[in-house]
Length: 200
Image (cartoon, helix red, strand yellow):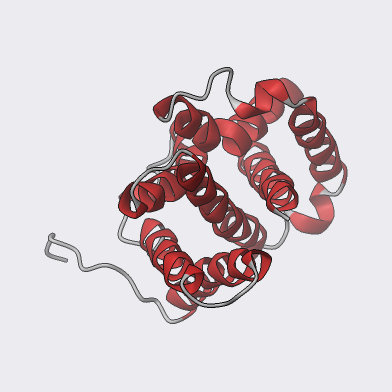
C-alpha cells in the first residue's frame, strides 16, 4: 500500500509539472525536467535531511519509468486535460495528499518525533511544487495565502491520531491522505485562506 501511494503521488506530481511546463511553452526536454523535479524534488530533500542516500528514486528505476510514462501520457493527452483550468489544481492536490503520508511514514521509519514526521510529510508534499514554480518563474503556492501546507499539517495530525485507534494501517494512510485532499479542495471552493498581514 505504501509503495502504491508513492507511485500514485509520483504520477500526480509529474502530470502537474507537465501541465505547468506546457503552459510556459517549454520544449520537450524542459517539460521532462519540470515533471521530474516536481515528482521527486520533495522526496529528494526529505531523504537528504534524514540521511537516506542515495535518495529513493535513484535506488528504484520504477520511479524514473513512471515519470517518463506520465510525461509522455500528459503530453499526448494535453488537449483533453490542459483545457480544464482545474486539471493542474486537481493533480497537484492529489499529489500533496499522497506524498504527505509517504513523508510521514519515512519519518516514522527513521524513529523521529511525530512533529518532525509531520514536517517531513509537508516537505515531501510541498517542495517539489516549490522547485517547479521557481523554475517556471512563479511565486510558489506554499508562500502565498492559499491553504496548502496547512492541509498537509492537518492530514499529518490526523495520521497520528488515527494510529492510536485499532484501524488497519492501510486505512490510516487512505484517510489521512484524503483529509489533505479534502481540506485543500474545500479551502479553494469556499475561498478559505490564511489571513494576510498586508492591507488591500
